[in-house]
Length: 252
Image 1 (spheres, one colour):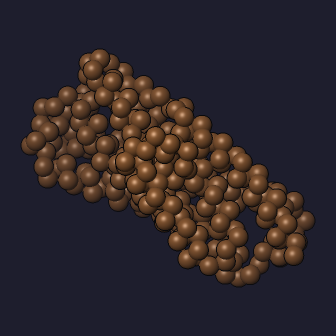
Image 2 (tube, rainbow, N blue to C red):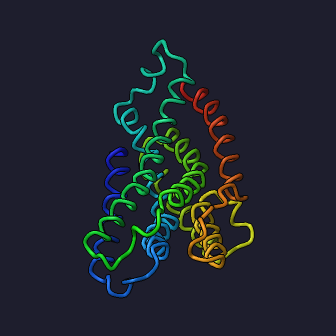
Image 3 (cartoon, rainbow, N blue to C red):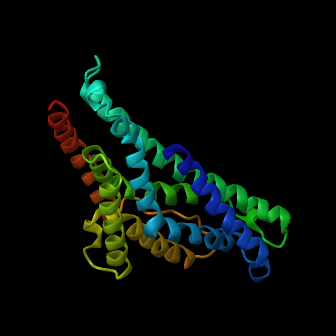
């Protein structure tokens, strides 16, 4: 379920934005290519940065561990001649991969649908600007902003057998994070569930500054802003702490 959600979500959202642009292409006709890419990708970034990405991580983190919970096979798994850290790290890396896959597909599908629009609607000059580099930077920053949430939700999915507890905690925290970031609270960058939305805000500010230099200027995203460093720090700390918590719990 986690794998297919990582594939279907970017495909579905990009397809919906594609249909919207296709049906209302007149308003964007003859705009510069860089403006078209910014307008096309901004919708997706706003959707992912608010609640969709945190809730997707909640679902992915639980799906990675749900099989062992449902079959009650944790003790069997930890009794195998494999180090407990290897099991813990492998599961985490798979969840890590699913989030990375999802955001990578957003880049690919955004580029594919944008170029398809320029073929179907020649007035939409997407091909005037190569957005691959800028989109890669943007979604890489969004990926880094999500790692703190991933570590927290992964640990919660290990500690709780049922879906409701990690889902409930994740949902409340995601809504709280969206409110804090949406109201531009000064210290929102310290709350991990605000990081995706804060990252999107810093990306928007960077793009505005870039556009003031002219539409032909190359887009460079400041990736390692303060919320990214906090996200990475939380991800590492929770990952290490989670291993020792699970190690102690698993031998009972």
